[in-house]
Image 1 (cartoon, one colour):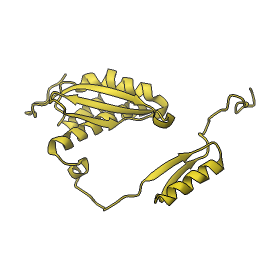
Image 2 (image 1 turned 135 degrees about the vertical axis):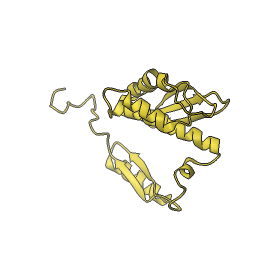
Image 3 (image 1 turned 60 degrees about the vertical axis):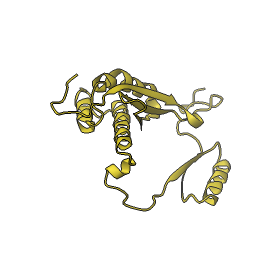
Length: 179
């Protein structure tokens, strides 16, 4: 581990854990960065649902050794060190793992400052922001019913997906006509 020449905060990163979860059958990856300060940790989203286990391995097996022992306040230096240490840069697996660590470090900084992270980035720029909800279903009628229920709750933006693209029903032939 390379120690930066500047004085640190006295807090160090002690662990990086990938948490794999799948609410509503959607694979998600959350990275938890633990520190030497009791009860102080940060979490960040590292989701790449098509390669969840690869992202978890990248975070725990590859990036964790690069960040453990570092000061969590050195967010930019940690990001640059992790990004530049890879021969194959900008791939989705490594970028998602690094994104989760980066977000977790910002979460730690916000907790230490006792402010929401958006305050660290300059504060609010609007009073509210539209969000979207996602609905899926096996047919258009089911999706339409879910959209109606959500718009009645006040949602203005809905992403609809009648079926997952590429999903194959095992009883039906595959895309090339073979069973």
